[in-house]
Amino acid sequence: MVTIRQGVMKDCKDLLEVYQGTRWFHKVRDGGYTTLEQVKEEHRGVAFERWGWLVAEKQGKVIGEIVFRYEKNPTGRVGIIRNLDIDVRNQKTTIGTKLTRAAEDVLRKKKAVRVIATTPPAAYNYWMKVNYFARGSILNISLSSSKIPMKKSAKVKMVNLKDVSKLPKSMRFSHIAYPGSLAELAARVIDNETTGKLLEFYSDSRLMGVGVVVREDAKTAFFVTDVTKLGLDFADVIISRTTSASSRWKVKKVRSIIPKDQLGIFTSFAKWTSEMSTDIPVTRLL
Image (tube, rainbow, N blue to C red; front, side, top):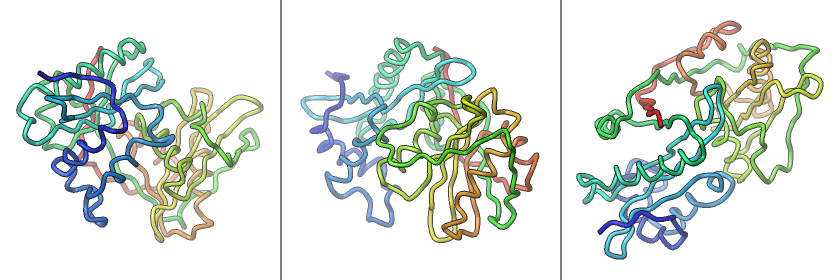
């Protein structure tokens, strides 16, 4: 019999074995998941504290997990499934479905109106079987740092957030950004997993938008920006100021991942290079 319950830290011992089968392509440069501590790191800090965590236990052993949360966007509250990992020996069972439905029950109680997951092509058939269907596409975009246009407005003031210990309320939503991407990147900065900046943009006391930019490597910065409804007309300023904040690192280019239907906002003021991501956004109404 399989029991679905709240995950606890001691479950990471069993999840190490699960990850070694499902995440062999992760942490390649580090030799994959080889230690318990690596798995525990996945379940700590600001990056994890706002996520729901359920595990599937069979005969006293954890054989799968699902991690999820919700955030606000123009359609209401949207649930986001961060990851679903099932032991390879149990992937043809109903365990994945049980975990998915259990997460949906929690999100429904949180008044989420739909749930989004991001899947590689190899796992798309699973999501179709549990009534999740492809909706939209994801683009990888990039721009040479020397071609970032300097957009400014006297109406918009930028605030550089420092010494932040919790995820700011201003970064718990998605409007033009891919759902979950803003909070996830901000949490990595707060948890000191990467070097970066958290930015807020105001007109008087009204929030117009937010941005996060991190130093990905010696040549590249990665960023996510979003705007409120009031800030849509200043999206170019917010994107420009966020990407320009990477200049101190002397990177050669900036890049991001965005919903395809938001590309026009970025190309309205700069010639971004774009490429379709192989990952597929899937969604289900609750």
